[in-house]
Image (cartoon, rainbow, N blue to C red; front, side):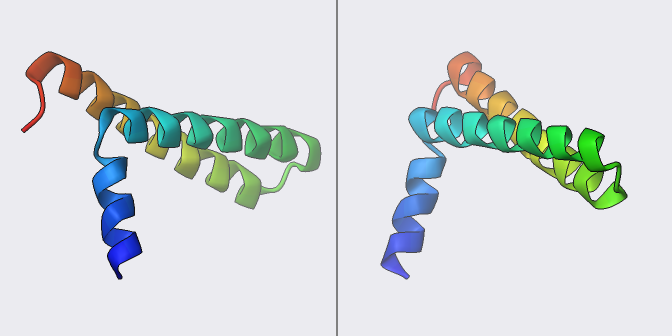
Length: 70
């Protein structure tokens, strides 16, 4: 349980948001490649899911620069 709490605290930091956001973008790109190749809706859904997660992390990261940390 302690490790999950530490991961959550790190994920809310600027470096955590950037790292997780970039990882999600890379995974979304991989799923998009598979979706285009195979043409099944599941891969498109996973692409969209990870893309939305990456966008959220990047927006939170931008928010920390604009508004500072709270």
